[in-house]
Image (cartoon, rainbow, N blue to C red):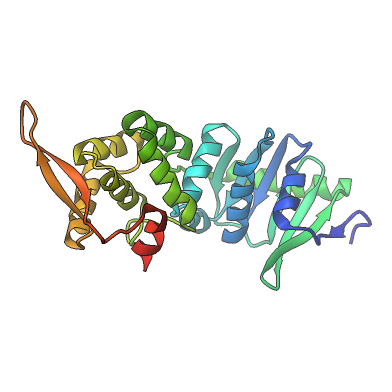
Length: 268
């Protein structure tokens, strides 16, 4: 063990925050799903300027982790801010590593907690960094299709006002995860139920969702029908000057008691 290596006994998120300080770039190699989540949420929470974050992970880790809308939308914000780049490779069989300009952090899980060993040994850092920079250069770019959370919030407010944005964020903040389409509570379901809570038109919320990159109008329509079949929402026709009437979304009385507990009720 290098004389400069120390075993970490502090909170892992605090360790990550300090690791991000005073360096221009951090290479994140082979993060396990819980490591990736902690790193990304920590980075999203920091107000200070971030180093350039380069993630080299297996495709399965990124696909499974970013199926969660809450995590994916914050990762998308980091990408849009030019603070993060994701690449994939299948040729990794090592522990999770963070490599900065002058430190290496090897991450392990002990008794269910993330911890690790941190070293500032110049020779070790140089050897590790040069090795994995080559792997990074050979990695394939990972495309994330989830829109940034900041854009979702901004456009919800612009299109529908504070009430809809506040309701949407209330659900996001109260849910641990918002998984993909095959689960009870996905981002399209949340948008439709929040829309119904505010009596918006199906046309307007589905057009917003397609424009912002959340999902297609067809997905919104299909999910609306599923929610109707479950007795969670209903619609009423609203005449317009030209064309077929639009449908206003309405929550079914006494079924969803409070938007504050929407996530719990949907996943019960």
